Length: 496
Image 1 (cartoon, rainbow, N blue to C red):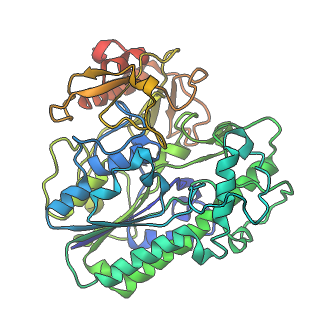
Image 2 (cartoon, rainbow, N blue to C red):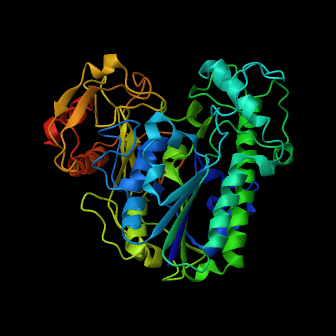
């Protein structure tokens, strides 16, 4: 028995042919849907990148207790559990965040790993005085990306003169090498993970040519997170969407290489395949760019998911059950016949893959310090914090942000908190927290996806809101949410 997870970053469900998109060139995603079970109700959990990956390891929500950080000493890591039970685990990735302060304990949970450099301004190739001209930062870059990061990004691009030189291509090549080298071995798990189609949307001209448009401004392929500004017309917004679509088409080509190898090695006979993402990305929808700062609309929260399980062999079918990323580690452990840790709250999806057996009534999702969201598959309830969004604390034994350690000033606020029910008796540092972005302008929202799938008009229905609030409170209790989470959301103490 073997298993492969192919994870893209920021892959938009609504821009894939299996989910109804008719203008993005992605034939291999359509081919994937014909070979697997396609899930219509997969939702994110904790956002953004590394919080989602902590869920992939631990099978439990991250965002109520922690923003962005490494695997904690008390965490159960599914790849590590697999390795400890005789399943060889291998990670191939070009996701730079694994190798910064805030993600530095993930890759070492695998039996072996490979890393391809150069994504998103990765501080890789060193030039004090580059022997080529650095173009000015683009208009979208000027809002929140540093000149240093753009300079490094442009330097890195000089080392990818062809599509075959891009980090994603190397990542898929190394994943395919692992498949070939171990085709006759049993009990292995391979994780192929690429940062694409996350911004910046760097691709080569052959993919851009698929999406001609009327934009004639400066180079612009790196969005910033925030409101769509007034001067941005439809031509500019569409151009950025086309840049993203070109990168999706490149991802599709790499996915095709993986599917070709599955066919050539006859791996469908005994190999589980999961193709997924951590979240989507807003590209002007709801007048927002990016993620984190905006509400977690479905463009970000409702994600694509494809799974093939050789035990049932179901293919070219769809499933409606509500599932989440926290279910993936439980699914892998059950597949290999390994008991899942007691703290893992996700559940195996074998019966859901086979015959659409439901696994939950509602799903919680969000980012640290922002909305706490819940959906039952029909309604989405976004509970906003009450200004000034306090109190808010980080609970951790690994005090790092994305690329830096916590400062000494931050650490001076630290006290020791009593254990949570999943920390195995460990007391944690309780440190003053900060949300991902300003939430002062955001409000509580309720949407009916049956009548308003694009979430254009919030509804006001006291009975439905009360029902969704009960779902939210139940899931917060089950996750031993800190008391202050109820306070900042304007809920009664401990949700009672």
